[in-house]
Image (cartoon, rainbow over all chains, first blue to last red; front, side, top):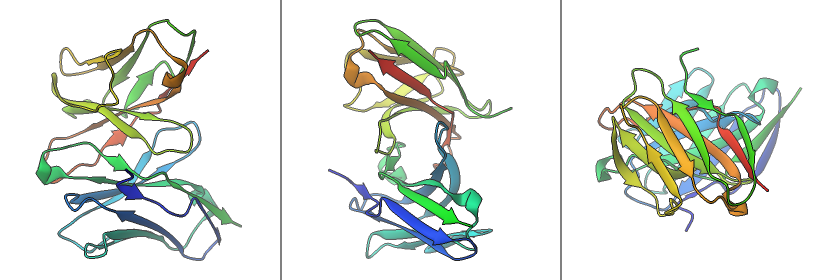
Length: 114
Length: 115
């Protein structure tokens, strides 16, 4: 039962263009969402988060959009840089439900070509 | 470096042996989590502590797995009688306990290989 789904295993974009990574979830109890970036042989690095009371959060080149009715969130990276090439994980938690665990998707491998 | 640290970074063991991993969280953080990640998957939650209390455990955490955080600072994860299916990256994370805030910061992980 995959509660957090990242349906695109990989994405390739040109440097300077926009990267859009998508994530869908099924559990309506999820109220906090996060994106992590992971390089090989390293732990996940926190990028950006959003609470369910918002529909957008922006931090520099990274913007996360949340559509609660569609149970969908996306991460926009603009402009994309070669150093952004990594695996991106979407994660969700049900903080009001008393659970602190993060539920992760399987990840999307982003390649930014120079 | 004030991030989450894990030791060892790599562990190779034979099936049936016991292994123990250590995690040192960010010093101000009172919550500590353990996750496991296998190839092609995202991290999967195992357990978490608030201070020294273990508050949640996953069904993934079989009887062979035990975690402790005796003084509310570092934590250890022990796997007894290892099996080949235990081969994975074991990740530790820490965070503050703030309502409606759940940003967890991960360490570099311990890669376990069971032969």
